[in-house]
View 1 (cartoon, rainbow over the protein chains, first blue to last red):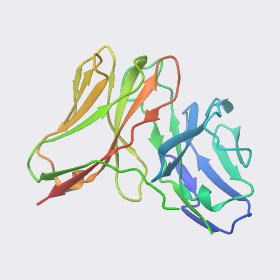
View 2: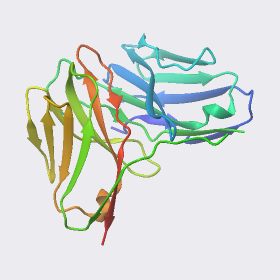
View 3: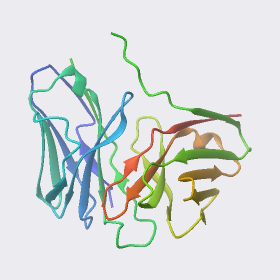
View 4: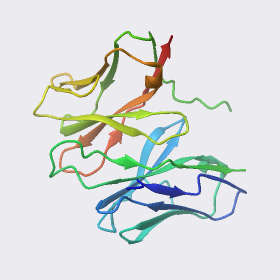
Length: 118
Length: 112
């Protein structure tokens, strides 16, 4: 398996522009998570999906952020309009779900998208 | 104004020594815990996990200890190697949820 695949790896955009980050989870994983990592706040959970349905979006900073999962193999995180304070590394992770399993079922993370808004 | 970033605690060890990284978790209802390793420019990587009905679990060169009484986790790395240099995060899974809450991390530096 190729693991969790994120694109692009790096994105530089101007303030006010729309940014779309993409994620392909591991096949067979029912859960998909979007995290943001900054020096100020560490790793923050933004939103997660179970079987393509958003379950908890309480971490989404504001209405400028939206996430979709149209099918089991693809998710997007969109920021419109982008602002300099959105600059961060955005990670996608997938999991088969660990509540009903034993051990060794932690998330698998992608390599992240480093977003810079100037 | 000046921004204040997270101050990552740093543990510096000599190659070959054992390392112990500590973590305090917040939710007494959490019943599953994971240690992750993050190298520069990469996503966090799963190391080892433990459930709340255990107090110790061993892997290859790593051991996780769980003390539920004081809500404390530790990661022990035996015979630390330069390749172990990274930021280590503990994460907790609150009971009856599917999400992981991450700690702030500890930077491990290994010197030859």
